[in-house]
Length: 154
Length: 154
DNA sequence: TTGCTCCTCACGTCACGTGAGGTGGC
DNA sequence: TTGCTCCTCACGTCACGTGAGGTGGC
Image 1: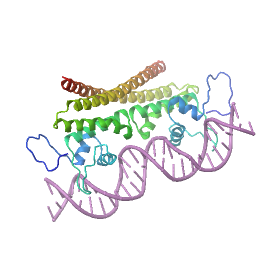
Image 2: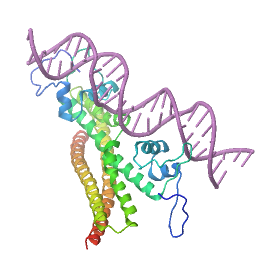
Image 3: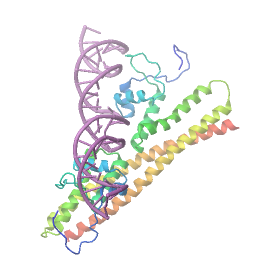
Image 4: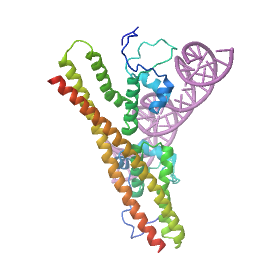
């Protein structure tokens, strides 16, 4: 988190306002503020009170992931904090990346990210299974009902 | 809802206590009471205050469906009320079934049930699609991370 | 009779929604 | 300068959780 920078060579250092971000990820400003309060987006960044919040592309990507985890897997925010640490790890990775070349440390961080993403994949799979079962029951119900209807119409 | 019955020929008129039901469907007594308060289980049945609640097999099946809809699709209780009316329709169907033979009315109820179940199937499908997309992104992330790790280890 | 589960308030909590009143940037 | 979006309290709401104190059935 370098301050007072303005170097050349930084592509797409786009900044978004909270309303834009909300629109991009499909949520509300209030929710984003709440997540910041909980520390879900990383350090509140010592923003002086009253000043408008600004978000980067990585912030947007992170929020999108969080919202998806929440909506698709139904995780509580407490559980989300654990999984969102994957992004935290990746950020510290990026910070490391430009620093001194400690490949051991870099590998450790990458492995940590991998295991977190693997856990997410597992959760998704489990969800899909439950949905598959549910769908089977529903279609069974449907054929049953249609059979009954056919009997009535005859 | 006949009272004071004890006829022969009624199979499995099993009655469950609220704690048993909670265990069977994977929720808590408090939640079941709350759903009854909202009318999700049909008429509160004029139960005198303080008397223990008793549930039938169909109540259990209904609750199981509600809980699944809630957990897998993330529906609000307001939305659930609409979908739970499928069960309501089926109950009135059953009531009709033993009554005078009005096949037209029966067919109407069955068609209504069908369309409600079809809506549920649609919701499930849409969920599955989103999960599929999410999983694709996650596995893409994974191969990316694994590649990076391989580079580091070399 | 003794436990265990049930009952009804009723307050607490989590994850935000919704104004109220005011300030800031294109 | 005028709107529009942003800001911070702060109270409301939805979907329950969690005791407190008491009653009921095997």
